[in-house]
Amino acid sequence: MAEILVLGISHYPPLTGQDDRMAGILKRMLQNPHLPAQLRTPEGWPVEMRAEWGDDQGTTSAARHRAELVGWMEKTRAALDDFNPDFVLIWGDDQYENFREDIIPPYSIAAYENFVFSPPTDNVWGETGKKYELAGNRQAAKMLATRLIESGFDTAYAYKPLHHPLGHAFANAVLYLDYARKGFGYPIVPFAVNCYGRKVVAQRGGMPSFDKVFDDADLDPPAPTPWRLFDLGAATAKILADSPYRVALLASSGWSHAFLTGKNHYLYPDTPADRAMYDHLCSGNYEAWRSYSGLAVEDSGQQEILNWMCLVGALSALDRQPKETGFVDTWIFNSSKTFLIAPPA
Image (cartoon, rainbow, N blue to C red; front, side):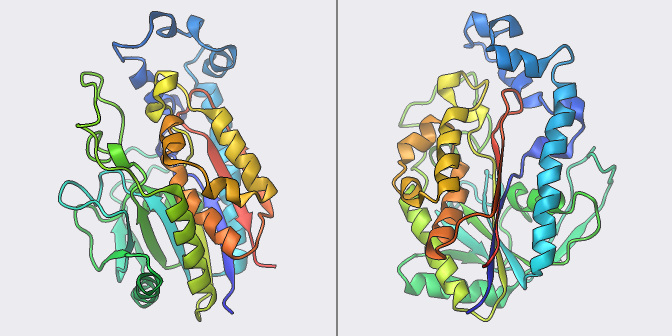
């Protein structure tokens, strides 16, 4: 039996930038002309949100938020280095990056030979024009796709990129796990999930368009159901456990996103819904995850939790509970961030 390490992190894009820009998504949402008048200024916000915003539009809080996120990234990287996998399989969402109008697969394995990508411009590391080159593992990716198809999961796969070299869910996972820039030598197998579903093309996998009100005819078909992705993750874990590879399974995403949470006027995430799922995760109540509905996911702006649905399915199949978990909540920095480390016994 192969050994498997299970990890979960966030790929939160503003972490690549400076602290004074970390609340940029909230500032964009405050430009919504449909925002109720009482929410247009901090005086109408929940008291916790006002406190996090402070008197410097969140810059001081951003430094604390960064420190907590980076601390968990370092802890996760240490677990990865201790395990020393043959490759890292990453479940991440594609937000209108590689997959666009010409094809939106429910999920797809990148069986590339290698990956070349760059950090965003004006980044916190001061890197300009830097190229990252990582190996893939085409043989393992093809084996996994084959076995999943044979198991009834009609899995898409690709040998080269379509529109984008590597989506930010995957690139940021590497950049953040190498936040200290000591190098990242592990091959990767990106496993893209269409988390954004009904908004992947309509909203281009991003922020809402304030000048357009969508109805069902404008929206896309939905994301894969939570139970199907749970079962996909379970099947993936079983296949890899029966393989010759030593594998790290990694979910890369935040959970509820403010810019997806309409019931909160796109200002802050649905933290109570995230906390409920986090409690189920920590207690090993995996059936609560599998039975979670797609409508509940959309209602709480939790589209990206579908990456973790695969991961929790893997935990269930491996009969494993996490050794360490962390929940980093926020009112002003767009999304709840969750971390998990579950090594083999």
